[in-house]
Image 1: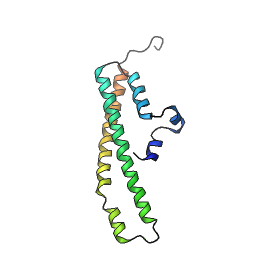
Image 2 (image 1 turned 90 degrees about the vertical axis):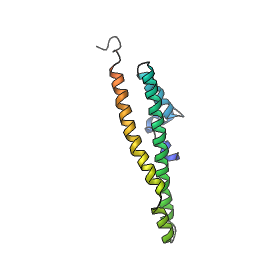
Image 3 (image 1 turned 90 degrees about the horizontal axis):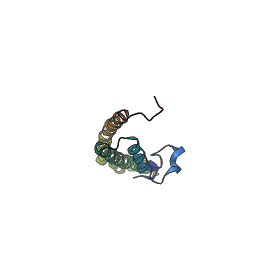
Image 4 (image 1 turned 45 degrees about the horizontal axis):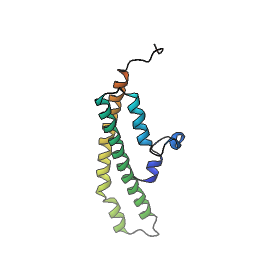
Length: 125
């Protein structure tokens, strides 16, 4: 994963809170959900989706950095520019991102529904 993508995976105000913001987020979500097997599976799947999304995002970011590097050469060659434009991996990773975003949206909705099914703590009526 790209360093800059990882650095912005959480808001700047909470970056110091944990060396592993993804793990921290998954643990927080797990505590907020009911203590059931389906909730634990949901947290695991969501964590996997987020890891996959960050990996794909890092690959896309690297592609754009490579394009910039190629264009910053004093005299970029046509072959270099064509090579940059023909990077199939970045298109594949973008497809992965589209799928991951859909999966994350669905799983976040499922988590919200599970939270709504929890009984309210005493005094919160």
